[in-house]
Length: 199
Length: 199
Image 1 (cartoon, chains in turn yellow, red):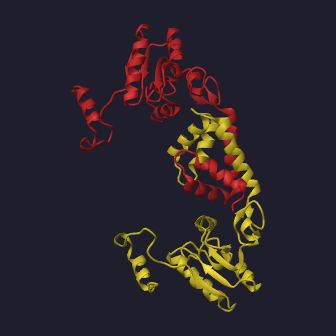
Image 2 (tube, chains in turn blue, brown; image 1 turned 60 degrees about the vertical axis):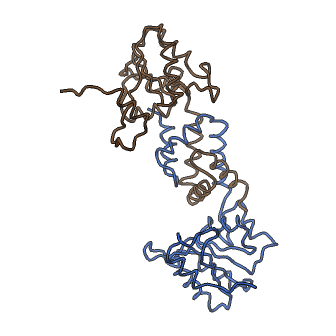
Image 3 (tube, chains in turn yellow, blue; image 1 turned 45 degrees about the vertical axis):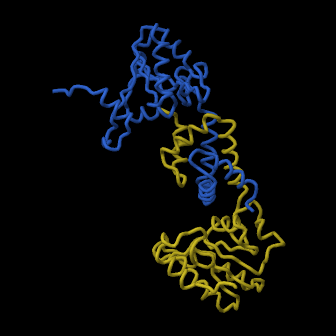
């Protein structure tokens, strides 16, 4: 009843993360209300990004330049490499302005369940970057999950011989978090990692 | 840090209904994982739909043909016109297979608050369709809101002189609905519209 173009558009929109058939129909209708103002610009933006954006050969970040803007920035500390699972993690850390060094996108975590082994991640490339001698410290900023922790331990083992410092981000009570609603794992980690108050 | 193409894409995605900056970033990342398989097809589908889809001159439905597939279908009853606020309502009724006649897209409801008057809706065109003499019954399938009810009364008044039958969809307990969770308005409407059980 809708014509093949509209059905195809709704089908593709429905497969995006967070959208289903119902939201895809709503999005398609909204876009159709203003085809030249909203729909064609979005089509052009998708096409432009698909052609321009690539993975940085140094760190794996997505950018329209290679090396990416972060790797090319002379003000960033080459000796400090923050290892993250994906580009979304890098974006979150950059939004927080919490890191002044470079990154390394791992491409996931080791996972026995999903069958992800070391060769599926960019671990070999990380060891190469460290072997150049320019890296002073590797910060592991992986998720606080079983797979994240296993991956962190595996990476620490592999990096051990290089003599580089290996650290990982702290676990504890999130900012603004009430203790009573926190899960047992977070509470245990926060108590174990307690630190003296500065006086 | 992301390059202008990616920033522009995320900005446009974030303005879609139901998406915000966070989901827009997730959608963009997901699409970038498979640019030629998912991103370019979506760009093409948006562009195709923007160029092909238009409003049916007869009923206002969105389709790639004009008149739309519903108006062009000889099996549908031209004498039975279902008036809906928008194309999304038409899609819902068609999914239910609940109507064998044609439609008329009103383009919204009358609203003193939003400043929507009769001239902002396709009311004049509905009166023209009725004046051709082909229409036997006009079914008002507007939302059960204050504006929807006011619009239904206004339309019934305007259609009065034409001698055409004007009906509106029933209000009551939705299928699968428990009485105890229903609002007062629905309960009142359902009790008022009670009907004898068939024996």
